[in-house]
Length: 353
Image 1 (tube, rainbow, N blue to C red):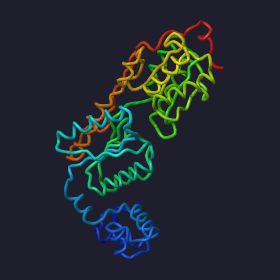
Image 2 (cartoon, helix red, strand yellow):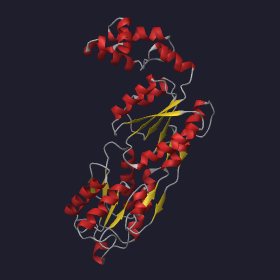
Image 3 (cartoon, rainbow, N blue to C red):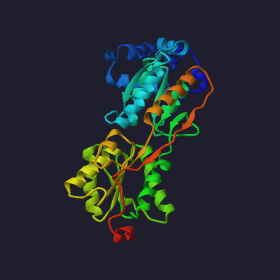
Image 4 (cartoon, rainbow, N blue to C red):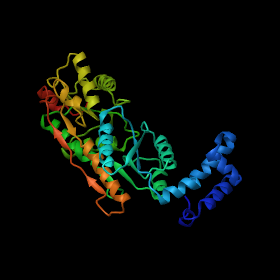
């Protein structure tokens, strides 16, 4: 990380710092950014690594970023194949357009390294600020944005320190668990998609465990089924695993509505009635949740509103206004036909295998 004094040096001075760190000439550093094909792979890597360590951006663009505005906002989303993040993008796009900004969008596919690469590329293209998702990032990402004085807003997670517009996933999912427990379900499994790369999903799982603990009930780790993805087929596959492990389970809570819909499809294929034999809960309230038969009980999350508020927060930062930067949104349990009472008195007494 460069010192504050170093970050204030001229563009030529910082280019020289990169050259010294990479053990090459300043001309070689210039070629690395303007004609990288003229350098060997080893030399190009040395220069790129040194530039990254020093948060260096080429002179002309750095000057334009300090003095001017590109009127472009950069957003990096984990995925767009499903409607959750797409709705946030739509809200973001519609709001920044009111201020004369356009959106430059990238998808990380839940990769921290890909997210960092996308952000660096957008910085080189002169974007004015960033909208990101969640609190899990490559460790150098947020310090990079701060060092370059690039305003940013986190979405889909709420944080009291970092500028954010989101909600508490741990708190959001607990009404769904309490709903199942109130219906006398005890033999419950949870289907998760991206626990290893999603802080939001880990918080949901923590909320499930906490809701059980608050009732004095256990929820063992083996009751978490890893779907390996977030689509309909992933939901079907995960339910097959759940049935093999816990054939007497009476309810499934899923990390999103698509997993829940896939679970219901697999139930139908196995001749299981929803909710007569199996209650199913989703998360997110996508259109498919209301369209399924029966419709899916789920947690409604304000994805579109989140995008609009994140844009408003970022516009305030760019204009120098001091405003609200930590916005916690409300979520809501939507009870529909996919949940009902546990199917036997025996199941209400069954806590674990």
